Length: 449
Ligand SMILES: NC(=O)c1ccc[n+]([C@@H]2O[C@H](COP(=O)([O-])OP(=O)(O)OC[C@H]3O[C@@H](n4cnc5c(N)ncnc54)[C@H](O)[C@@H]3O)[C@@H](O)[C@H]2O)c1
Image (cartoon, rainbow, N blue to C red; front, side):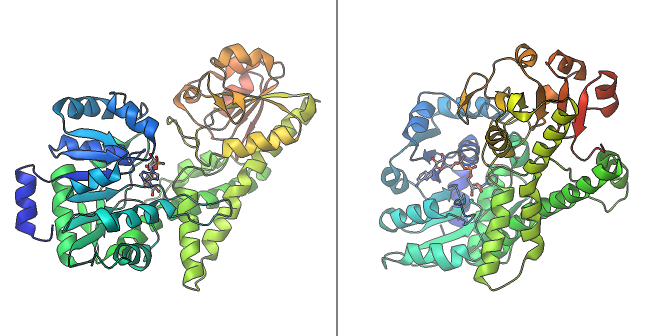
């Protein structure tokens, strides 16, 4: 995989064999895209249940429009299968994509153990002249300082000699992966210029999107983190402003709506907190890099603190509304509307909903949950209701935590079915005048008291 003509030929003849290690939210659609381009693709995962289910023909990502059809087609064409056997898969592959999780631990320290484990495994099984592309989000220099040392550790592999490596950090949004894979520009960085060109050729063949060639891997990873941390910091900015605007009786949404009309203002919205597998972790990844390089990233640190305090504010809004209705939290039953970390996806990783539920529980409230993506499941130790309207008469208050479509379209009138008509909107989706007309005791995050 270091001769550009050979790679071109292997793409044109569709003889390039691909292995994607980690077939979760990002890795599975990636593998399916390679298979759809006509390349024999195998997905590897340690999750046996997932692998078996995929091989039985069940597509797991029901909230990813467009991919179920692709899944069915490439399975039918025999271009895609899954396995837990990494040895066998790697021994048949020329191109290895790593789409492994990069979470953080309870102390917010990034955890790269999945990538490290797989790279250790590769030292024994990688085919000569293979190309490894790391799609996972990693800190700048982590590939150069850590992953390459692991791969070269047993002295069988030598980068640039019998294997090569690069990055193509994934930047798709859950729920919109097909759209993003076929529209968003991708960053490419290689361990040398030739590798960057080869990765670019392969990704151009599969995705046909703009490819941004970076001078090296660490710069590509720096761009990926910069774009996401930019959002985390800007959300913190509007969150902090919204707390002040609330006290001034100013509706933050009206401010943002007008501000965005200026050409250089980029809109971000306040809310109950920033969750998911990307933004909070990416900020902590850069903070980890700052520690490593004896640098200061105080704005990111403060932004994290602000965003992590937002669940407290949601609880305070709830307590305030209950007080207005002469209710104590201990005597109250509260319905949480939405537990996903973002609208219209089934994903609760680092969701602020969990923090808010724990805080309300600790204060003695009875908690009920409704989320269209988790109907009937047991989440955070609570059974998720099957129907929102049926449970309203049993609760005193509802808190909108995720702006799922179903909640964005709701008529605020239905909340008058509650025992006490308290509605807390932490996502700015309820029109304040409609809430007033309906006679609700309404608290909107950042909307003025
Ligand atoms: N989900 C997103 O929104 C998103 C967006 C852009 C980038 N990313 C990045 O992409 C990477 C993957 O994220 P994801 O959301 O797809 O994660 P995920 O948890 O959905 O999928 C990861 C998969 O890897 C598997 N796995 C874990 N350890 C393994 C091992 N040792 N061998 C084989 N398989 C193993 C898991 O079982 C899982 O199926 C992360 O670095 C993440 O930061 C995620």
